[in-house]
Image (cartoon, rainbow, N blue to C red; front, side, top):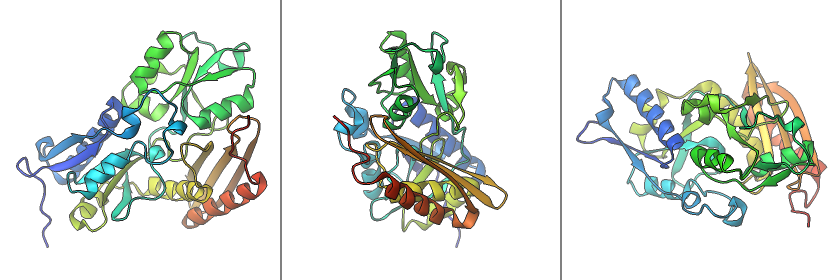
Length: 315
């Protein structure tokens, strides 16, 4: 059976958030599909959808509900047939998709590291007591407080442009961004330096773009298979299994990274108390095909070590 390709008259509709970074990711997806099938950009339509996380910008993420803050409205549009595929930053994605949707296509992963942004040029270890570090990420907050308890962490929400503006306004002395996002925006020079995973283990699935489709859509399945990156898929199978077994959300400080070396997968993971008073870390290897089971096993052991109430806020 011949696949029907999109045309300017019947374009393939790509759903995305409207931030500059989200649009860059949608444009990358369009470019890869166009190249794979010899299509013009006019055969695609990028549909911007505003999510709950985009609308509510004056409160911490943990106060407005954990999972799906940046995905729910986009996924509903996909279920309703208003778009054909949805492009997501995988670190924002809940581990379970709504019934009828699936993510089985990942683009080649970008730089996984966090970027340290400090207009004054100071490194974290050089900052004096009480210096304000801006972040809305519970993971980054907890990691900073574990390593540098003398620093003060302040809420710092917004897209890349908003956070850079807050730095310029003196809301904080420094912040963190994902190197992947800066690279995709052509703004890598914003970073004072990238932080190696040994210094700050990144968010699970950081740097990875996932493309979601309707489960029964064979046409989209065939098209997306042409741009799927198998290595990224193997990494995320382990990382997202680890996250799923921990029941991770925006309200739980969890970090992790899977890397491949031939047929071996290495998984590093950590969980932290939200107040930065404790960190539990692990580092294991397994055959690549056992990556998901390794993630689940590591999560089970870390939860047992953490005990009940580990993720509760201490007052």
